[in-house]
Length: 474
Image (cartoon, rainbow, N blue to C red; front, side, top):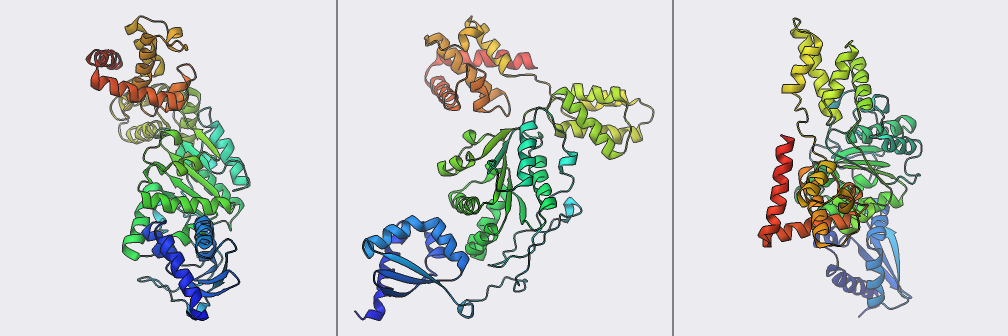
């Protein structure tokens, strides 16, 4: 074999090994474009399409490359890179899109939510102007702070002063619907843009990320540009990250997460459940969600609900009697979204039905339109029903007793809490039943499900208590 061909043979041998290790799509996108240039003194020099390409390959596949080269070349193996000259690179064009030119990423917040153009026009390897897709209404000034979100607001304000440089990276915000997760996440992004106009910020939902990834891979065959787009961001906000399903999509997100985090960029996620409760997620992703701060938004108390109603009424420019606001805050307890909906409905009806008092209208609206919370079922009521059924005390239930009856009662209480109370995390259930961790609660729920399938007597215990609870909440 001639000397000039040896480097090609060595790299071909490496590719053959790497192809057996990485996923087919990764191999096609990140290894096929690499060309061997030379080999001398145990050092293989390869040519890559761009500096970004080199940085990504080293970040995502360094261990694979190191082990493969040692296997093919030996312990002294080294790898050197050359960036392909621009004149040798194919021009990247997309249908209906001009060739991008390098510009500074000057991003402006849109004047209205409806003016969001799609952010998913892949810019190749150049930084371009992008729309952060932030709704200016969701700013900190319009966010009511209370005990339900105090920690999240404090963390968010800290992040906004130094994005990517605090211990709150990533910030994982979780809680039930209508508790303000999107508002808080976008408020952080807006505050960052106000303080650092040159920061490239993007808000995207988990479903949008997944859909665009699939389109980039299956339709455009532009996974490289998809990855490059996200790796150019300074702040990435992903809303409803529980929708980020699929191994290929999660693998792409995993590599984007690593690249941005290692580069000191800020990551903010929201979810309807805690990281430990996410299902069908790779363990390596779940572990990264826990690197920074996970903060739960809870149901607002009366004081916070009343403050929110006052604030929103002021923004709408209407005067509503204090007794009416107090009535709404007392009747609608579920979340900010339903509370806000009740207020807007009241304002609309008051402008039409002038013969009724606002208090009378408020009563009608909360009864018929808002879906006022009819069930006050909570962990405490579940535990009381279980204790009553098994004729034990609550002290017995939350104790460390290993008596069979007590253990089964405890497990049933955990199971029913998880299945009957919406948006109740495993961690919360465990904390309320003697300080158990989420793994213990998950094990209890699995045990109850298994026993119900095999033990008719045990199944009757569970169904009897469930019937008691459902009847009491009607």
